[in-house]
Image (tube, rainbow, N blue to C red; front, side):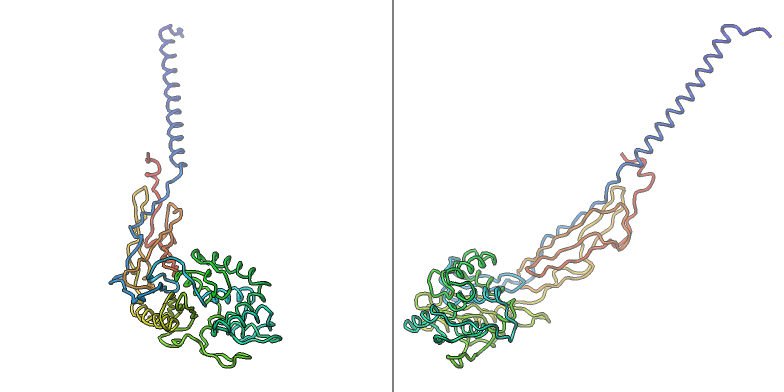
Length: 416
């Protein structure tokens, strides 16, 4: 068989080279396509995005209330767990005769808890207490009669403080609690800071010292904190008590039990006028609602009576305007979940939210949505709608109303 010519050999070589080139090219293409598919498939999938509706707050419908504020002094009113109904007068701190005793009782009950109805330990009358009693009698201040060698129980002492307003009993409790009135007053001021009473300073445990000053708003904070103690709430709601030497004595809050008033404390002196820290409770649309207010500086012929009388119309006006309102309706549009690959689903409020408030009050909302999975099943929890109004912290669980499918294979492979 004749041998191949040089041209034929070169042709065969070129054909083989071309065939190998095509194989190599095909392999490279397959490798590149495989790498591209792998990269596209393994790339992180972006999470669906929650787009919240502009639902930062809502204003409760109606005309805001106009309160019958006193024509003198200062005053403030608040709905417990909701917020302030407003204030009158300037915001400067002023003397709080008698009302400082509420802080004395609060500190004592924090340090020496007393179960409702219990007497508590016996507290011997000290020389300082006796001296305060004698001085107060001479200057016609409020006192609880005491004698050397006598003891009062913790309950009797607190009754003498909160019902009668005895300055001498304030001294007795201060020394019993912390060894001296100076140390106790320091504790009163630390406690005031802790309660957010930034405009308040106490110079004595009774409020007789004009250096014991506060504002109505600060007094309300104290009143709300003290009312949370069952023993305190029980004592200030007592119309009359019987004490060892004093016998039967009556609460100077003669409105107690009227218009829902459940306490708290009166006080007055010639320089400052009458003061009244008060609380009233009624049922509003099936909910227990407590109003706490303070009236300071009522300088009249009968200052205590004037302060108590000023509280009545405030309480009546407050309960006339307080009601329950639907802040969020079931089915209200909250936002939308949108997936980068196209599908979306609307999120709505699963139920209505009702709050205690009054016309014109602003209720704020916050939507919290965490990281969302790429595929969301129908009914899956996706976040929380928080209704923020005072202590009325209401959380609505938000769920996906329909299934949101994950990305398709084509989208994953063709996305940029």
